[in-house]
Each structure stands twice: as C-alpha cells, then as structure tokens.
Length: 281
Image (cartoon, rainbow, N blue to C red; front, top):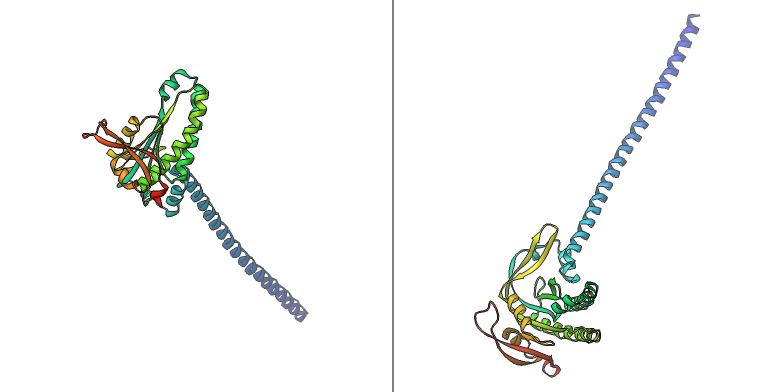
C-alpha cells in the first residue's frame, strides 16, 4: 500500500513539475512578447516624435516662406529657405540700384473718385507692376499706395543691377502706358514716372514681430525717389552713375541739372528713351 501511495505521489510530483515547466515556458514566451511589444512601442513613439518634428519643421518652413514672399521675389525666398539661414536679411552694407515709380495725378484722382474705383485701379496697377518685378528678379522694398520701390543686387547679386533696373523700367513704362490709355477713356487723367539711382545703402529687415519689411536706407534710395518726383509722365530719369552702367545698352537724353531735396549738389539727370539693339550687339 505504501508503494502504491509512493507511486501516486511520484506521479503527482511529475505532473506538478510538468505544469511548472509549462508555466515557465509560457512565462518566458510572455516576457519575450512583452519585450517585443515594448520595443515596438518605443519605435512607434520615436516615429511619432520624428513625424511631429517633421510636420513642425514643414509648418515652420511654410510660415517662413510666406513671410519672405511678402517682400522678396519667389526665387529669392526659395534661395534663402534652401540655404537654411536668413543671414542675407540681417543689416549689411551693399552697392545697389534703386528704382522708384509712381502715378502722376493719383492724389487728385483718389480725392475725386469713389473708394471702390481707387482700390480697383490700384489692384490692377499693383498686379501689373508685381509681375514685372518678379520677371526681372527685383527685390520689392515697399508698396506705398501708388508708389513702388524696387532694388537690385540684394540679397541676390546681379551682374549689372543698373541695366536690369533700366530694362525693367522700360517694360513697366510700356505696360502701365497701355493701362493709362484705358484709364483716360474712363476720364482718369493719370501718368507714370520712374527714377533710378545707383550707390551704397544699408539693407536689412525693419519693423516689429509679426510685421517686418525689407528696407534699403541711404542716399541712393532718396535720389531714386527724388528723380521719380521730377520725372514727367512717361519719363525714366536716371542718375549719372546709372547712365555710365547702361550707356552701351540704351539710348538716353540729358534733361539738365536738378536740385533734389536732401542732396547738396545739383544732379544731372538723363531720360531713358529706348533699349538700343545696335549698341547691345
């Protein structure tokens, strides 16, 4: 009887050992699965973090691009974003060509016309000017009502910024000239004048958080603006330095000396007549 009991006891012990062994195997497998789950969870967390960072970077780049595109031509904004730095927009000194243009008679027109008519005319005018600025790779310095200032050779260098500015001015005169004829048919007596100067300026962003502009500060900007003030409808007045830079490419006529506000000496100004293909060739 004791032998039977001993055999039964041994059998139970054997079954118990097998049960423990099975449970151990299950526990080991569960541990392995848990470790795999933890590893995959960590991978998912890392992927989510990378995705969130990538989205944040893309959103930041879109916002940055939008901010730059407010005052730079698309190709310039693309260049700055691609470089990963906005050092080009920090304050610096550079030789540039500045172009200033506006409409003659716009103040009188705006005072005597309905606001809707004024805004419609400005929209058409700005759209035409903007397309030409982009075409020639100019940097839009400012829009101020009908006044527009564009600079060349910053932030992207231009081989002959003065010539680029003059060629753009000729294109502008032709485009706005056609619009002026249509406006005159509507009873609006308007003209278009341009002033161009070349020299050194301090450039960079000015403004405050949420509203920055790109500005060129210096005598060159003032001269361009003053020449524009002196220009008669249809004239493109340029400074002597601009004339020297474009002499082989355009035909000009001397207009005479002008006493420009803020400029100590009288300045000889030239009116650009046309691009000279014979000289260019």
